[in-house]
Amino acid sequence: MKASVLFLTLLLGQIYRPAMPQEGFHPVPPDGPAIEASADFPLHVHIIESIWHYDRFGFLNGWGHGDLLGAAPRGFDFTFECVTPFRHNMAQDDFYQARWKKPDQKMEILLQKIGSNHLDKCVVNVTMRKNAYGKYSPAKDSSAPTP
Picture 1 (spheres, rainbow, N blue to C red):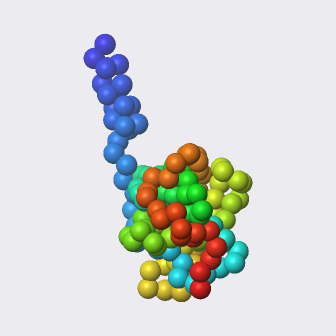
Picture 2: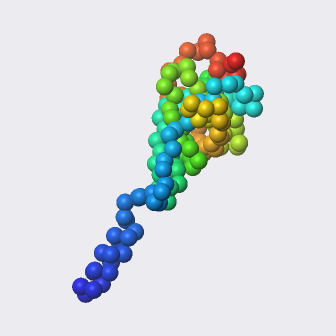
Picture 3: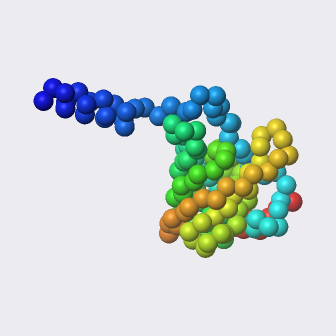
């Protein structure tokens, strides 16, 4: 009996061990919104919250929520598994450029490494909401790229 309890304790200890990245793994800082407008990414999204973590093998995944901007902004919840994390928008009028990969289900967001001109892309899985999370001026239409 004691041997089986000891075995289960050791087995559960291996399964529920806290997530630790692989040796030599170094997390990267988050990307921000691309500075230059891109006609290939016509949507504008405001990321309100973006949370991420690295699993024990160094893979990045995260979740959050944001708003698809336009004449009638709509909220969305999202999950992602990308090469780099991305931060939430700091200012109310700050946005990420995006495009649909699968309407109302998958969106590709254009990211820029902070302090660099290097661009990354991240596909996020979304669940659209009826209402926006934020409050926006009804006169402002952010659905078209701005220079």
